[in-house]
Amino acid sequence: MGHEVFFFSLSDHKRRNGGSQTGVDPEGDHFLVTRYITNWVYKSRLGNTKFAHYWYHFFDLLSAKVFFKLLRVMRNCDPDYVVGHNLTGLSLSPVIACKIMKYQYIQILHDYNLICFKGTTWNKGASCKKACISCKPRVIMSKFIVNDVTVLGVSKFIVDKHQSFGIFSNSEIGVIHGNTNQKSVNRNLAVFDFGFMGQVNEIKGIQTFLDAAANSNYTFAVAGTATQVLQKKMMKLSNLRYLGWTSTDDFFEKIRCLIIPSIWDEPSCKLIYEAAWAGVPLILSDSPAMIENAVYHGVQFLEFKRGDVEQLMKAMRAISSSTQKPLGPMSRPPQGENLLRELNRMGYLIEL
Image: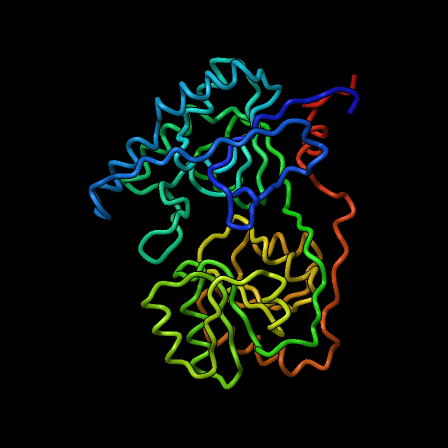
């Protein structure tokens, strides 16, 4: 690039595999300096009650602790750019601190935390089209505080959804679809017909998956962390194996097809291109951002209506009866998107 650029990166926590919780991962040598600030979570002693949750959310709007901590650290670092990822636990204080210090703030948008306390925009079994009572303060504050920051979304859909809530009306916006280093796996070791991987909960469509398993003779596997209630429900199915947490390489070798039956508005879905590049066929629900990312990456997949067990089973039969050769590893997108390249396109990096 011709000169050094200091990126100060805010991230909420590290994953168990060592990676940061972010949809757009820094690419090593492009980041001459990267700092991570861990999540300052306010742990309530009131237990898992509604009052405790509201108390937490009150502090998660604006955190004085985070604000003054950031001011001290940024004065020492003097970064060129401050990059915000998931802001849960960090509140909106980083954006305010950057505006006061006159640092360029860039929001990597890969969840709904700015408009929803739960980060899902999912309530009472449906995706939210407008803010509920508990989320309105969050939306109002976001409108005033982050409305003019630079935004990079992991899908066009997540940006559009925020804008439908009135956020980012004055922002410069770019989109960076995810990337991965996933390699192809040995497809001759598969022992299960269909697999489910990730968070094992309602919005990820686990019930749709289990209903399909209960009404078919195929074999199924679930990888991820499930509650005791769900584990007991899965144990009742003789054709399904619960594997717990499993690495993608190990799981992809065990299954003939991956089903991603999410019923909420996924911001993106890294599993889509990981599975595709590993050579694993895919069945996807019609969650908009998932389809967007699958099409962008040139993924071959079968699609079914969210929550529709009959359509899912029809797609399963189509995959099983297909005489086509298994999908091979995909090639990477030719443009090779990454954070610095997108910033350069938007005019924020100038070669000296």
